[in-house]
Each structure stands twice: as C-alpha cells, then as structure tokens.
Length: 202
Image 1 (cartoon, helix red, strand yellow):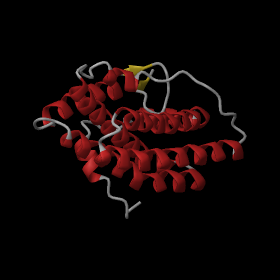
Image 2 (cartoon, rainbow, N blue to C red):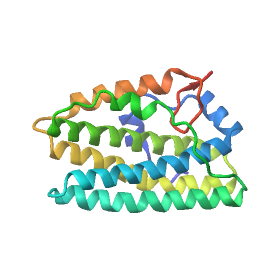
Image 3 (cartoon, rainbow, N blue to C red):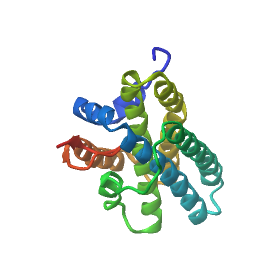
C-alpha cells in the first residue's frame, strides 16, 4: 500500500468514498464483483466507440486501443475470480452514476468529444479511488488484485484528461470542475441501489 501514491487522484476528485459505502460493499461482495466485471466491459466498449467515431485522430486510436485491451483483460480477470468463488455472472441493473454525468454532455461534435473524454477521466479516477479504499478491507486475493489495478486506472484517467485538453479549443478546467461537482453529488447522495459507483447506501 505504501508504494502506491494516488494523491493526485484524491486531489482531483471533489470527495472521497464515504465509509458507509465501503461497509455496504463488504456485505455485498458478489454484487460488487458482478458490477465490477460489467464496468470493465463497458469501459472497453466505450473506448472502442471512441475509436470508431474518431478514425482520423491517431492519438485517440492509440490510447483507446491500449485502454480497451487492458479493460478486457480486467474483465476476464474478474470473471475468473467470480468463477473461483462460484458467483454466477449475470446482468444486473446499472447504477445511475455514469448517466448522471452523461446527461450534461454537450451536443456539438467537438464539445461532445471533449465532455465524453472528461467524463471518462472522472470515472477512471473514481474507480482507482474505490479500489484503493476497498483493498485494505478485502481478503488477500481481492486485495492483491485491486491494488494491481491502480496503476492502469490512474494512467487511464490521465490519458482521458490529456486527450480532452488536446481536442478542446480552450482550457477544459471549467468543464472538468463542472463534471466533478456533478460526480461528487452522485457519490454523496443517498442511493437505494448498491453498485460499484453508487452513492451513499440507504
């Protein structure tokens, strides 16, 4: 744990995960793992969508290709953990977390790209933060696995953010802060549905 510095991500996000969410996660590890797997798959799909929509932007193609491969590897790793623990992977209702931010993405193509990349950065940062805070409370297998994800998730967050600035016509700081505020509201609001990115359990 001491070798892993996520202070830039903690400084980036507007809030940290409430302890009540950690406690809920420990009681629902099956749901946590199923949703984690689903999120890795969605992350890979989102990266592939960005590739498909930006076929002439080589930096997006290179970064998102690598990201998609890594997310698919993580998906396979979570599936293996589920199998080992005899937890059936199944479709479950998604949290409103990503949709809460996505509804504020602007419509014009250039602005939509920038906002989509910013939202991607925030999701990756939150995932990293949650892995970090969950890890000390988990059994050795899950602790080791979640700590192993920190480096790639932190890089993904930075890749998304750098790409957003590359394709913006001016500083993205205001848009980043706008979405971070929406994100923190989602994380700190009461949420009846427990998921990997859900809010405060009720």
